Length: 387
Ligand SMILES: Cc1cc2nc3c(=O)[nH]c(=O)nc-3n(C[C@H](O)[C@H](O)[C@H](O)COP(=O)(O)OP(=O)(O)OC[C@H]3O[C@@H](n4cnc5c(N)ncnc54)[C@H](O)[C@@H]3O)c2cc1C
Image (cartoon, rainbow, N blue to C red; front, side):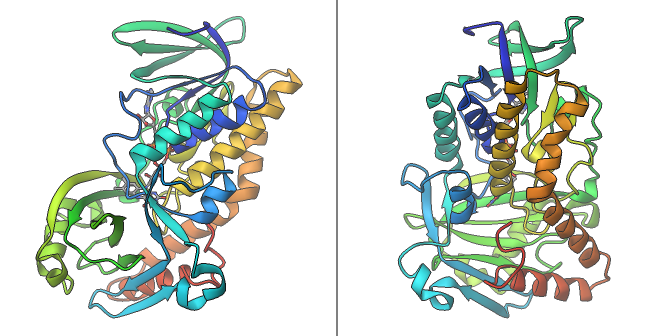
């Protein structure tokens, strides 16, 4: 049962964006409720879990075995024929990275649970299997969220509602924010967790329309002898689904020999928004964070780092905002987006333009540009390395 029928902040969605928002705002002493419709956080897994050490550090998280599956020391980016650029930080910057990793592959089940635990430890109240089904605005100026929990609907009041409800965000739609996303900007992703594929501490990224139209394929270490082999495709430019492309990649690509002994132990999939961040991410009583606001890197499809960062910005903003005791009008909440644009938005919009400029080209120029862009993206001198 809920401890109250009124909170300062109700966060809808317990992924990295929601739990990070809840943690930072609860730390300021605000009354915070976080709900997630899933019965188990992070499950079923719909993510490869690659993120930089820098991303964890930025969200004040110490890397721990509790959620890390494998350490990462760099990248290897391939063109469609198998030529590659190796960006191994152990060789490029041995003084920094011979003993500590550049990043990690995390287990999203354990990572999401860890993040929500952190929010609980600073006072956020968390309810799973609790789905937000509608949002109303009352005459007394409060927002009212209808929460369905085990077939019972509860009405909970909030000063501010945070939509952290992922790519299919309903919260944004309920309040009329322009969350529509074109099919041509959603990567349809599928990955197999496999046993029997060798990896060497690098995130391997395979470009080429032939293998992953509109996206790329990947081979990531997963630790304990496991690897993740997957890809993302844009369905509007291929008449085959992600599964067909993944099987094609596994069986007919220049990497097929590596997969001969592979056993699939898990199948995971989901959509990634490769769109521009929403023009407006707030309205009266409501802000959006993470995938819900399209806070996803449109070149790499990475959204964990950006979810943690936007969650931190949102949580800190809400803490400051609530202390002022002013009404949560769109005008007053617009400062959240100003802070986000300053920290992340400018770079993400630049990346979106870069993506568009690549995919505007015909083949084979598009393939060459994507390969070159990703090969330089992960280089130590890249202006984008930390996004
Ligand atoms: C196959 C795949 C691989 C990926 N690999 C990577 C990677 O390696 N690195 C990376 O950085 N990113 C990766 N991503 C992207 C990353 O997973 C997302 O960007 C990230 O999870 C976004 O976090 P979020 O908190 O915004 O949303 P989510 O993690 O999607 O969390 C949203 C939460 O909201 C809950 N919810 C939704 N609606 C409601 C409701 N009405 N009521 C209550 N709860 C609700 C959901 O149950 C969910 O728990 C990948 C994505 C896919 C699909």
